[in-house]
Length: 401
Image (cartoon, rainbow, N blue to C red; front, top):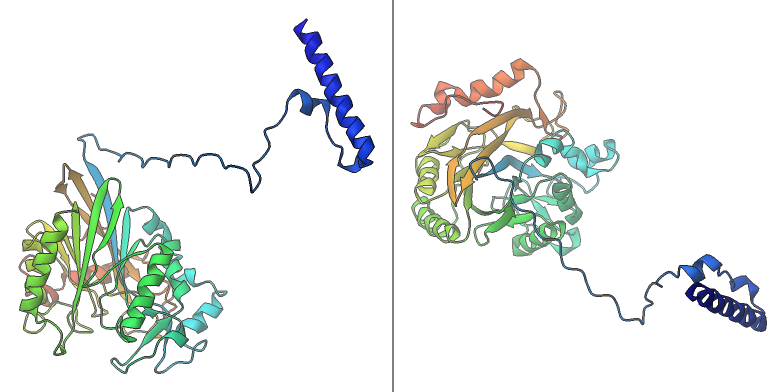
């Protein structure tokens, strides 16, 4: 009986719709099937309809724990990234980077094409971004350095596109266009989803349940009257580390320091690299990263923590063919349990800052030839380069132990 009533009701509805369409003489809009009447589809809300409730956000996945309940965090660090043109000596569109960009089909992501997979496999990649990202019409440069690097704000996406999650912005080129240039660059990084840090701003990145704080400073002689001496900076760094440790599980400290073209750190005043690096560890830093010399420097293991004195260049558009294009990618794997670092093995990936040997094309590329790899290793362990480093690392693993 119920089935008969349902059939009668459907027939009546169908007849009513057909009658309405005939009356309107609009058969073109009449596309209602019996299947629709039997199985009506819920209509999509129009612009004036009440929207459905917003679904709850997807919960953050739980950290992947090791057998002992610890969490592994792999951190990758690289040196100077400078993309753009030198406004003092180059015309936009005709500089070294722009010429190479044209050769590469106009896609700036080419600079990381050979290391993107490495960056994507870790939990955090951090680079030193040396230059300014701002519209040319929005800034004016000051003749502070021999070079003043300016890039399109859209270049910040090159970092996030290639799994570089964080940058330090405390170096001797970030201020070449004044505070306006710094503000533009910070905004570009934030728009691209890249965490940044400088002396006034701690970058924070959370991954796998671990909160990582990144501090950054520079001490590049000759110091201006408004810049801190090494002893003054040491006190500031210690205070900042203590504050960072209140909210972060892991704290890194980056220094832009030393003298250009040096293969080893200096400790005489006003450089004081060794003293500053060890003081940062004493204050609670879990890793110290250095850059500025454009050359690789040895690594120290001080009180169980690493001081990477210079990561050299990563992708550097300031020189068509540097006399030394060697560099390395540094990776440290922290095993953390209940807020305590249980272990922190490291490895390096020897590289050239170019995919070519005849000139610098800005595409950092891991070495595959044994001879080239050994060149990097011998530089890092050279007696002259480690003679002042009591805690110099003697073994540089190329794979995870």
